[in-house]
Image (cartoon, rainbow, N blue to C red; front, side):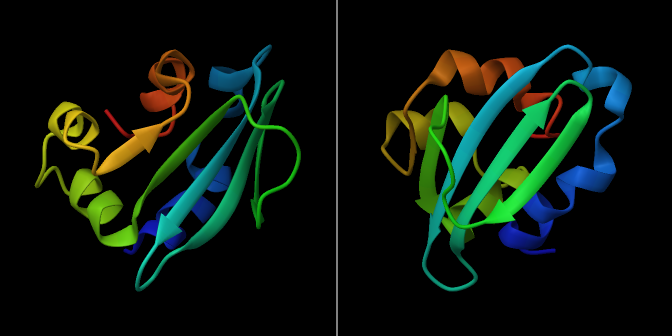
Length: 105
């Protein structure tokens, strides 16, 4: 599964009970082969993934699609990827709140 497929699949993977009462918006900017821009919105039990960058995000995640795929496969350490600049996160505390929900931890 590539990075885009994974993110688009969040709508079906996340239990609505887990996101009940939560609200946020993420922009994922994945460069390189298999990349693209996606918006992930969590709104009181629903998760919507849209192509492109829509609205004002609480967090922006920028990386290569290939790096994101390595993170998913646990081939690289997420903390090291951030510290070395392979992954750029505009609001780390927001991502940490949702990393488990999104299956990134």
